[in-house]
Image 1: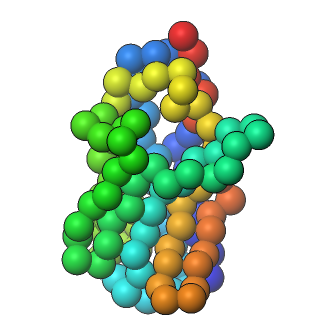
Image 2: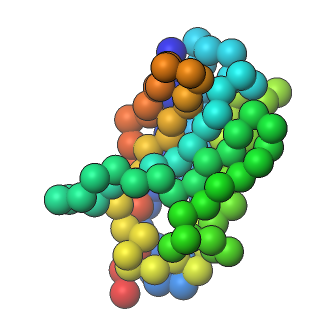
Image 3: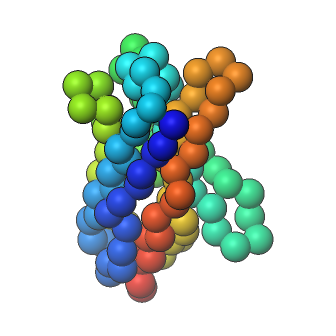
Length: 114
């Protein structure tokens, strides 16, 4: 199983950025997928999740600014981030979860300058 995240970068506060994650080696439509982020000294936190039903869950801090999507036909997921804030800075990881199985991408850095 491999999850390949891409799209991170440096952006000014108020700007937008899109992340993408390509999955291989798993039956993607069967997995609940999510984006997490981690900053130094803090635990990895859930940013957004999209279940196999299409139901979405967002952290309160990103609600209304981020949109998570999944594209089962080509085994990809995206995170569209807008109105970015400096506190959105972190290493963003994609995750695919099914029962006890949990797979992680390598992380992509997002830096928001003030």
